[in-house]
Amino acid sequence: MHDVGAGRISQNGNKAGTSATLPLVSRVADEQTIVWVRDVPIGGADAVVMAGPCSVESRRQVIETAIAVKESGAVILRGGAYKPRTSPYDFQGLGVEGLKLLREAGDVTEMPVVTEVMSEEDIDIICDHADMLQVGARNMQNFALLRKLAKTGKPILLKRGASATIKEWLSAAEYLLHGGNEHVVLCERGIKTFDSSLRNTLDLAGVALVKEMTHLPVIVDPSHATGKRSLIAATAKAALAVGADGVIVEVHPEPEVALSDGAQSLTFPGFAAMMDSLRSPLRHIHQRKELAVCT
Ligand code: PEP
Ligand code: MN
Image 1 (cartoon, rainbow, N blue to C red):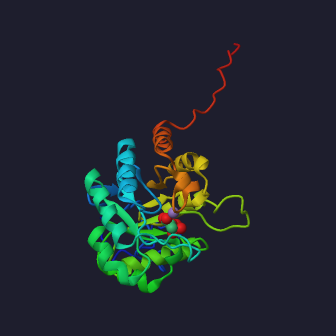
Image 2 (image 1 turned 180 degrees about the horizontal axis):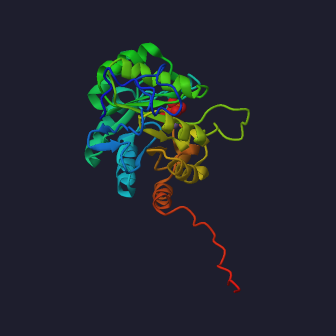
């Protein structure tokens, strides 16, 4: 972990020139922060895969999913207990019961767990159960929540707001570092654009740009970015190709009956196939055969 104390502000080496306005998150020269979630380093040489259900629905669902994703190579378990749903009539999450089940699934599989914090009043109970706290897209600019989360000292997964500029996203991260928490991982999860063909538009160039601008690790959520199961493996691979430090993916034992985000959740075999494709190299570049040189 690099030192975020006084004296980090530098005019040198900050390619995007944000060191004056975003002194704590801006990258100086080639520095790179590693955020540890228990024993898992995010931002190091290896990309990290987080996976699990959108919502924790039952003991069986979350434990089966944890076992399956761990077997295929995930190292952090995700699962929502407090869900930010567009409609108040949709499943809102199991709350404390969901937290306990997520913790149990993490313990059974020896994986750290990440879950979303929607409200200041839930912070303490979530800290008792989770290893990493997710700030969802809808709360990226909830500054009161960010200030409180800064005080927890827990690793934070800060999702980009669907309509947030990169500067606004980094400013939200600056709140967390300014409040005393330097354990921040950024997550691009798609933004709203004119095109409604997909749930969101994955801003991969933005990921590459943010990697230049900040020393914080940056991961990508291809599930929420696309909303479409068939596109997750390809976009996850593309994310790693542009320099993301990892991906977070939704997985469900039976996506067709999921209580949230089934259409963008991988099955267990689908997740295993995605992991295989992430491990195989990108395409080779075609080379023309050497022409015989006439002398
Ligand atoms: C989620 O992770 O299930 C979620 C609601 O994410 P986002 O805040 O990116 O929509
Ligand atoms: Mn979801």
